[in-house]
Image 1 (cartoon, helix red, strand yellow):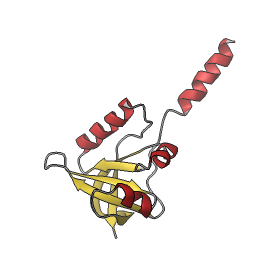
Image 2 (cartoon, rainbow, N blue to C red):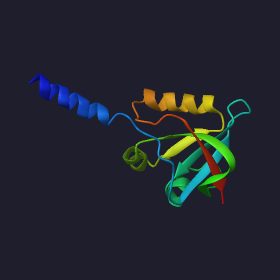
Image 3 (cartoon, helix red, strand yellow):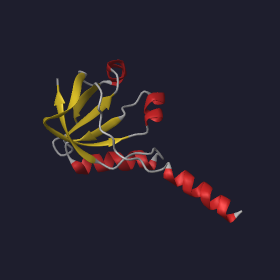
Image 4 (cartoon, helix red, strand yellow):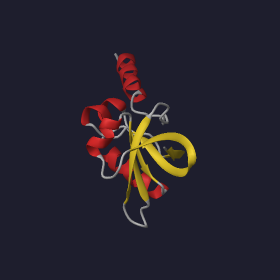
Length: 122
């Protein structure tokens, strides 16, 4: 019985960790310049419609590479799709990304660690 319980616990914990996977397909994003101390925040969606539904600014196509550097976290895809939220979000400043990550983790949302990514807006 102990072995069964230990196996279930290990199986459940294996699903808790989320490793960052950068967007590889066409993605859409908008940025918000919160304050000079927080830096610009970015919210990336898989679809243009998803971005435009929630955008607080113009949605632009985004790909990896380029000159702009952001610290991003990734949320579990099914949660992002269900609620219409971004799949990736973050900020130019790591401290702001860490605060966003902590906020989501406190809501019991599985999120990755903040990861630095170069972004190019088309």
